[in-house]
Length: 311
Length: 273
Ligand SMILES: Cc1ncc(C[n+]2csc(CCOP(=O)(O)OP(=O)(O)O)c2C)c(N)n1
Ligand SMILES: [Mg+2]
Image (cartoon, rainbow over the protein chains, first blue to last red):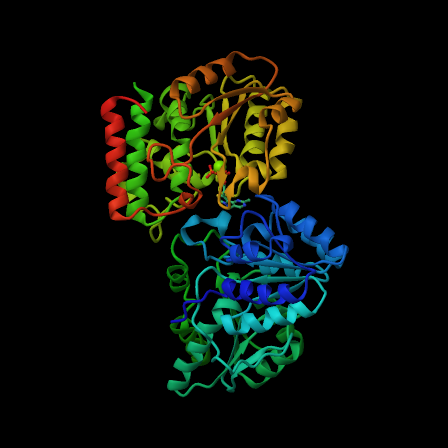
């Protein structure tokens, strides 16, 4: 099991880039520890801004810095960043089109038993609804590195969500297919298409493996780029399959699933099932307990696929 | 009742709870305990059997991460069976890491900082509308004061002349990233709240007698809300936890648990802090 959380990789990439590019600024809201950015703060005190527990201030100050030429990465728990400072994200970042990357840490249900105030089961919906805002949920540490390197090179608003805990590698060291804003195809098959993002990609891949053992062929897509979604990849995968399943660590309302529904419905109509979190506060528990309870694991996804195919 | 002894007994419960569940915001729990004990065992009119009484006093723990201290008090006062806390943070439990109003005795959900004061203002304002006699109490953290919503509330409470509202700041001078004055400076806190036209009492927030006197004084005041600047020690009661930022959220080891309980027992034997 990999021991490095995605947030740690974000810090590594930012430290690498910040030594070459003095315009890179990291901003935090009493969140440097949770974001694994304490090392950055110590190493680059002149490129680090601490605003205290003030997420609205965090995002507006970041936008102001960006409008004066800084390349800003603002990191705070995804739950607060995507709700408390949503208007700042909408107006000062997205609408004003400033060079700010918002990094939502401990996303989804990472905070487990801390409850709904600390869960971000709505961030994909909230952030995706903002014109100009791009939304990325990398699936593992290796992909996170590629994504962050790509984001460091561009100058448009983005929201990146990562979880708190280390996740199993989806890819292999030295073999990480990555193209910006293009889904990564993990397997191809013509029975079922499983489209997932973020921490749900690993269980989706696992479901593909379990299904293959039973002679059921699955296309599995890593849709780390939830917005702009890779429409062509969705259409291709759905066209070749009998049914489509989406999986995300997010309410089933307004997230990746909804976006896939819209594409499949208009381009290649067929049955799509959206797996995700319910429209209610999630059950108390550690992330894995929560995932297991809602069937968001390899077995749960595979079972759903078999059920759909046998109908 | 000796409130300081009660507070130290409950500190033991908090530390045990966090040790058993392997999680909790221990530093802030220990600093806020005297404030909560003075409110729940002396000042507030709240009865476990009458949480639907419209005249009960209202309480909001705005620094919701200190819920473990509130849990031990509510359990001790019979708001729910003590055994319920065995499920704290466990799969399927309603006893989560922040206040949850599915639990008897908890008025409002909190955990996202900067909500408690404005919500308390709404409660106090409703009391004014209804000519009700209840008082509203809210406890905030000092790091929490960086949230803009706190200052929107600061403005509104004095504008509405809410003398039925008493707010407390757990002024322990620490937050997750270190000293509050390094992270985002607040001084001069007394002057800031006075500038917003609050009546401000600057006291030792781990001294239950000083707290009692302050709450009594606030009750007499007319036409303005009261802010109690409770100067506390984060981790209060356990020498190796006191004033250390890294104990914001940390689980004691076996040896630390034993040491902490022993220190508190000695204080209880001496009958005080
Ligand atoms: C809106 C919001 N932002 C961030 C957090 C994460 N958080 C939990 S506790 C804490 C530090 C609180 O410091 P302080 O208010 O001083 O409380 P205390 O020292 O009493 O624990 C932070 C940043 C939160 N709960 N809510
Ligand atoms: Mg504090």
